[in-house]
Length: 185
Image 1 (tube, rainbow, N blue to C red):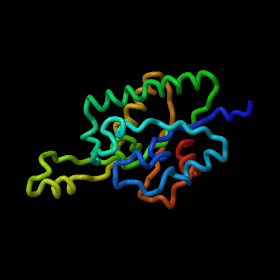
Image 2: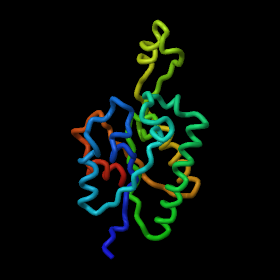
Image 3: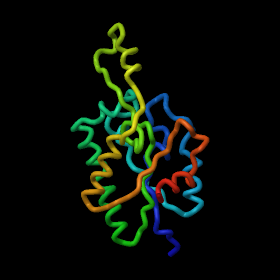
Image 4: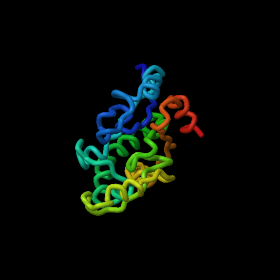
């Protein structure tokens, strides 16, 4: 058998940009500079489910970490990740090497080092509601809800995996090699 016995867990949208909120997505399908080197080097790709698409569907609005950090969304994330963490635990017990988790910085769900903050709430039709909401949205340090739940679930089972993230705002610098370095630090 010619298996490499190694893989990396990757946020869903890095393999399927169509799962992103409409209006986002800076590449046509999968993020090739990340994915193709993995395939060529024989590293398996474990695509995580998209919690936002499965929670709110394709016609959802962009939201912030405060809007997703609610009990229902955390439960939803846990339900999506239970089988993932089961498989990770079993794979590790059976000699598979898991190189880490790759998220998407800026995402309120899959951000690793940076996430999207800001929420003012209220009615869209108010005179200044849209401007006030837009003005409140900022990127800042922190982990998105889904990645936070994943790291908590792994920790509960004594599993330590490194996390790294793609910054889609600077696609020119994205490569598997740069992510791999951050995972192996």
